[in-house]
Amino acid sequence: MANPTEPGSIQEKNINFFGVPIETRDIVAALKYRTELKAVCQRILEQKVIEQAAQQRGLTVSEEDIQIEADRVRRELRLERASDTMAWLTGELLTPEEWEESIRSRLLRQKLQVALFEADVEQHFAQNRLNFEQAVIYQIMVPYPQLAQEIYYQIEEAEISFYEAAHLYNLETKQRYQCGYVGAVHRWNLHPDIAAEVFSATPGMVVGPIQVEQQHYLIKVEEFIPAELTAENHDRILSQLFKEWLDAEVNYLLHQ
Image (cartoon, rainbow, N blue to C red; front, side, top):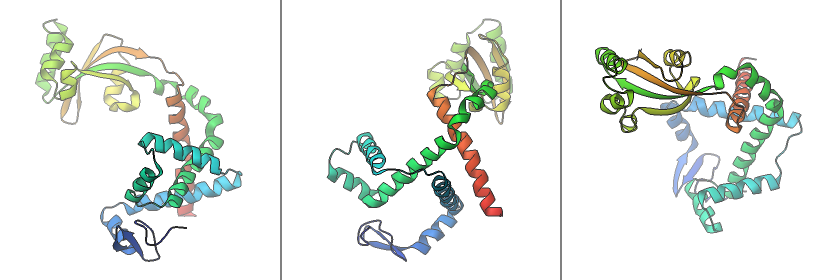
């Protein structure tokens, strides 16, 4: 059980912030003023839904599960000694018991996510395969439509290469140094107007100029990467399906 004198320990009315008592009502007020209270309440309701759904399905998190995850976090944070871990927990305003509970909550969420939607991942991928295609692109972003059009004409007439133009004109510093290189992107990484042009192009094409808000883009499509159910895409789909379900469950609670 948490010692009420430890930094970060929660009492009925106060939180001990390294020796300075802070009332919980002041924390609530601060969250309100920063418009963060709604998000916190949302997370609380989500956890209630997760706990109930996991209980209904007989899902639990063992002490061994918690220990394995705690050891993983320690390795990741390079907390080699017990004293390092305690110093880190103190800095995060957590007791060891509270840290273990936070790990248990996170692992329970992961177990429920798998139990509910693991079997649906492949079907979702097959039905939405186009969304997981990637394009390797270079881009030039400039502030004026006339400049974008002039650069396009110069590239078309072979007066300058796309890469030289990107190095000279690109507003984005990193991309300017990399001659416009953006890398492999999914449709959802791009503005819809740009995505429509990019994924209907053929490799080697320069598309644009395309205006998005106050900027004007020229995009060179280098190649397309076919959709594949990688571990990353698998986890993305699993998280998406679970989030949609969780949002619906919380919404039901709020409106029943």
